Image (cartoon, rainbow, N blue to C red; front, side, top):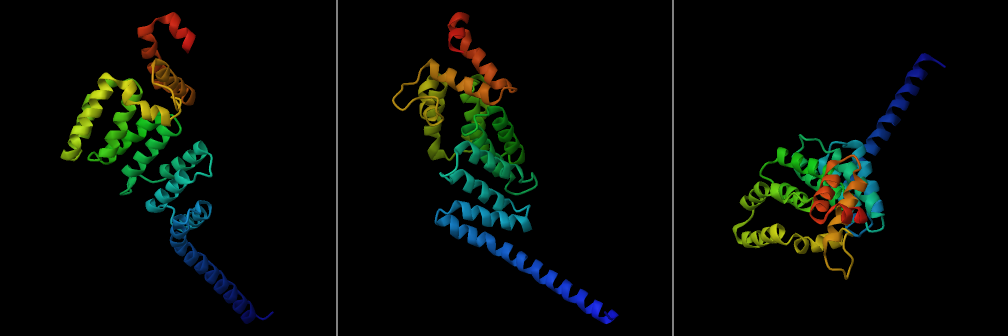
Length: 248
């Protein structure tokens, strides 16, 4: 083959490569719009596939990562714990310098606590969210819930007032009512959350055993974390060592 023919062949190959790359880039740009249309119809699996295609071209797009995490969390066809783990993986990939980083850490912490029952990881995420955006009410609310649900009521007052300061004036009476219940009637205050998290049966009334189930779960899910053990120790103390051995 003549030298000119080699040049022409190389030029053709380069053109094909550029056209192919351009097509895939265009397809990836279109993918996010297609994903939103699919998500609106509840076609989560196909929508996730389109967002993943988009993230191939834009791996640092925080909006797309949040969208993908949300689709994992909302897809009822997936096993809940596995879906929560996938969502957390996406949220973890949103860097701290992103404008949506604090929001991502709040969502991450909520999933780590409510779905994965890992209060240590969740508290780390909540505090990271506060460090990234100190004015965030949601981050302080998450931290307050974690303190209350791990029997650290004595540490929650400063966090409560941070929440109070960031709450709309017309919502503060309700917030104070919740605070009062949490401080003096924690079993009643946490009843609905305990039921949603599986610590309390559908027709069961909250009692001391409800708390022990909660703390045992924390210990099981985070065997190397201190909160489950510490909460169990606090739970055991008032009822005596023998009774505690029977329960835990």
